[in-house]
Structure formats: structure tokens, C-alpha cells
Image (cartoon, rainbow, N blue to C red; front, side, top):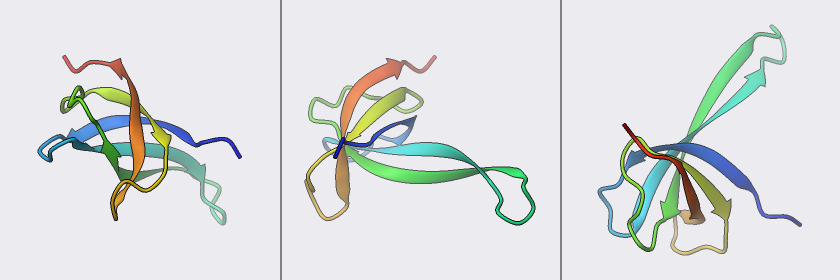
Length: 81
């Protein structure tokens, strides 16, 4: 089974070697058929502490690194301005 790849914005980089990435997903409401945006925060392992707040990053699913970290930083797509 292929690994999940997601793209989102870095919300926090205060932890050591871990960042929090907010991923927005666009879905249609089942009953009202309205387009809605759902956001979810993922804790991501950033071994070299490359990503900063506001960066757009790509993350990849991995083995559990800790109790809450399940993703690894793939690359920084766009740096914050």
C-alpha cells in the first residue's frame, strides 16, 4: 500500500525535531452539498529542524516515531515570506 503524502502549512516549530502542520481538505457536505474546508493538525518529525512557521511543506506517512508523531517531513515546498 502506498504511503500517504499530504501538503500543509507549518503552524508551530517550538518542539525539538517536531513541527505541527495544518492540512486543509476540501470536501462536500453529504446532505447540503456545500463545499467545506476541514483542517487537521499533524505532528511531523523534522530531524534537521529545517521548516519554520508559515512554510508550505510536504509530509509523508511513516512508522510511529512517538505516541503522536506518524509523519516525516518530505520537503519544504515554499518558504514563508
